[in-house]
Structure formats: C-alpha cells, structure tokens
Image 1 (cartoon, rainbow, N blue to C red):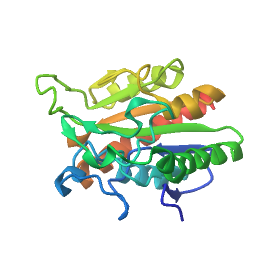
Image 2 (image 1 turned 90 degrees about the vertical axis):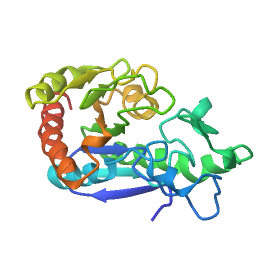
Image 3 (image 1 turned 180 degrees about the vertical axis):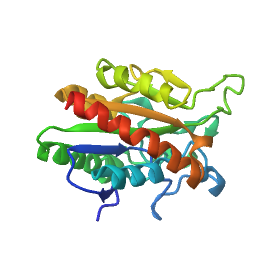
Image 4 (image 1 turned 60 degrees about the vertical axis):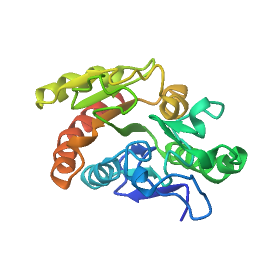
Length: 238
C-alpha cells in the first residue's frame, strides 16, 4: 500500500493506464484551509477518471496507476520545478494552507513515489504503451465566457503518433474531439513528457469532459469507446 498511488492489477497486457488526478483525498495531517465542497470540484480532482480507469483496466486486462492524493496536495502532473506544483490558487480559489507548506516533504512523500512506481512498471514491460486519462471542466469559474464544447480532447507534446490514429476513430464513434484542446499538451504534459516522450514510449493522452463522465452510465460509455481505440493505437505503435 502507498499513500501516493493506487494500483489496479487488471492483467498482464503491456499497457499502463496513468491517472494523475484521480483522487480528491487529503491526508488528515495536511490542512488546505478550504471548505469540503471544493474537494468535490474540478480544482481538487479529475471527476470520473478513477471510475473510467478502473473500467478500462478490467476491460483491457492491464495495470492502472491512480494518483491517490488531490492535485491540491501536490500536482503529480507537474515538473519538479513548475510553479503550479503546490497550488496556492486554483481557478480563482485561494488555497491558504499551501502558502507555508513544506514542498520538499510533499515531494518525498507523494510526487517521488508516484513517479518511481510508474517508472518501475514501465521498465518491466517488454513493449509498453501508456494511456493517460484526465478530465476537464466544461466551464472555468475564472473564465466563464470560454467555451469548452468538446466531448473529449487529445493532448500530446511532440509525439502525436497515437493522436493521429485515435482522433478519427473517436470522431467515428460520435464524439466531438478537440485536437490539443481544451489546452495544448505542448504547455502541460509533464507526466507523459517524463515517462513516454523522454523514453520513446508511445502514448495516448485523453481529456474527457467531466459532465459526460460524472455518472456510471457516462463512465461506461466512455470506457467502451476508449478501450478498443487504445488497443488499436497500441497494436500499431507498441
């Protein structure tokens, strides 16, 4: 057991599901100074990601690693020197408990074990492929006029091989697909930059719209669509 990650062992397929923001958990000895309602919002967790990742691990017969603490405790999808690693503001909300937090301690406690675990699992795979699962809010409180109409987004930095395969397949499944939307993977892709692009490992980075995966029916729908497409990407690239 680790307080940094949750591991789902769905089978032996050389495909690793990675969900950096799958949890809203805040350990009892960490005080963020925010109301409990915010821990149910997108600033604390990627809504629907844990459930979809679990369904996909079972469906595909593979391993999934889920971040086990809220992104407000430490953002696992940030480089070690990134400004947003320990957020003091998020979408207009102050996180006062982080102002005097011990960043090195949180790195040692959560960030390092999480990424070391990802590296160990990938090292054990003969021909690895990564499926990175995130979700995005349809509306930002800090920018309410911004439209985010996509059902799903595909993100990448330099390696767009899986993206080019997946986008037309997702569109054929009836989804409105954002290519480098609602934001660009060239701006925010830390976990995949570290574990996939730096090592030549193919990957598919997806962002699901949260209101579409907030209940069991939506989670099943997206898992059923994404699973075969991830397998197709892997079979062509891994």
